[in-house]
Length: 431
Image 1 (cartoon, helix red, strand yellow):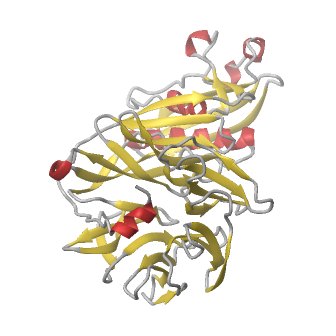
Image 2 (cartoon, rainbow, N blue to C red):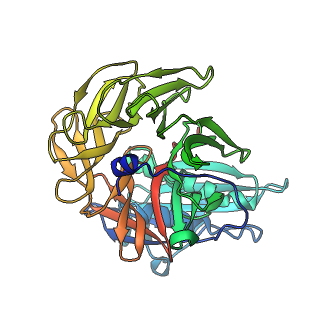
């Protein structure tokens, strides 16, 4: 059931903090790969015993799962240097691995650690980049590894990495009255999951604030829908908006000062914007049709939304101050759940053209490219940098999360045993 159908059916939700939610790790499967994947060797780091996380393995997994790199199996490594002085480029060059990463971790004497890594070019034998990164505690080691993977990714590909980010999604288990829902926050690879909200009613539409300190989401309480703000720092859940009828589709402005959303208390579902400092709100659309699913442009000047004002749901664009919208999608009988790419040059949406699947459209040319095969794909979200997209699909064991590269070559599937995972939202990069 897509978001449009949910609105028409008034399927609204409840969010409540609860104790002892079930813990379920996502299992990950990677298919496809970039034909021009760069060969790279991530040598095991020399680590002190007090740090159990294998940083080099986390980095290796990040780069390999992206599909843009072909990593070297450890069993094939003829040497395992950890210092620049002991690096010999010849063996790596002979094995066809142009890029090599080496590193070490030591105790900082203050209860934390320091990791030093080098990205080396085996063709020239020279250092490409090198950093020292402080790790405050053993629990922060995975963040350090993701940060290193981001640095390598950006250095070699010229686009920002996305590994040191978070994903928020909804996990559901059980049937009928026994069905439960959780808001889950995990690392970009599905590891280190946290379960801050647990409910017996559906949770919908989690959306990250630009500073990653809050998540807006939709809930339902005592027969009434509402938009809530969850603080990732304090764990507090605050009710922000609760009007009669639909309260849905929260979307943060790029500067984090405003929230766009949908209300229906003035007869029809329309787009509104609230100034979060003053709590003053403005109605942006006023039409007899259903207007829903707002999304801001990267510069905050425009808003995409879905409307059936033309007969069936299509994607429209308007000024962030309101005004006459223009229709952007014409291919396919229905198009919904839009968002801009991080560079603002294309839009992402769900289309029913050839089944319910994910499409990306170039704004300059209007050319459409399909990134998934359906039949029931939903909720696409760009990763920071725009190289990868996450969405929800129907798998053999229920709903699952998938990521796909923007060229469609590399796919990664995240499944939860015995349950559904859906409504994914990719966090911004850490500032």
